[in-house]
Structure formats: C-alpha cells, structure tokens
Image 1 (tube, rainbow, N blue to C red):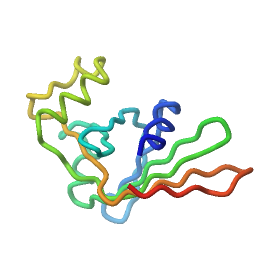
Image 2 (cartoon, one colour):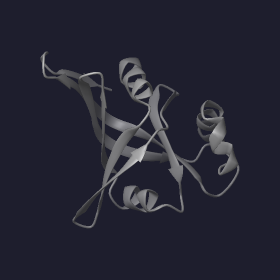
Image 3 (cartoon, rainbow, N blue to C red):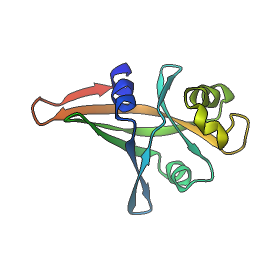
Length: 130
C-alpha cells in the first residue's frame, strides 16, 4: 500500500471516477492518506461525488507521472470517525479553510478490496492487492 500512496503523492493530482446512474463521472482529486492500515481519500458530504459513492461505492482512481500510470480500483467505504477525518486534515492543513473533523460535511473514504495496477509503455504491469 505504501507504494500506491507514494505514487499518488508524487502525482499530486489524480482522477477519481464514480458512476451516477448510467453516467460515468470523473474529477480531479489530491487528497490521499494511509490511516489504520487503509488507503483513504477525502471529500465533502455536500458534493455530488459523496452522493454517488453512497449510491454505488465502486470507484477507480487514475494518475500519471513520469511515463508511468496507476489505476486503483475498489469499493470506497465512508468512515465517520473523527480520528480518520483529523488525520486527513492534519496531512492537508490548507483544507481546514473549508473543512473540520467535527463538522457535518467532512467525509473520508477508504478502499476496501482495492487493486492497484502500475503500468508503463516500457515495463510489464505490476498489480498490488490491498
């Protein structure tokens, strides 16, 4: 999991794909953390992405960096624990202008049954299950 985290952190921006009905939705994200042995992302409960993930938790992340790319697929599970939210916001203090671990909007999700594939044009793909 550390390799996945390090790749996403090096990219800075990754793209999260969800589904709304039968329509795929993709948007840029930048938050990623390891907490309690799980890979987490963060959003706001008021956002469409949160509603989409609650309706269908299957999601995929894609990012590109230095000639290689990663795809991370799995089910995203909401974690309402204050400790998980605080960990994320402590890692991204600029978000504290919009979010707080004790508000009713901050939401963190972790991957359950995740599979990451790191690929490039010059090497065989590497699969990491976590």
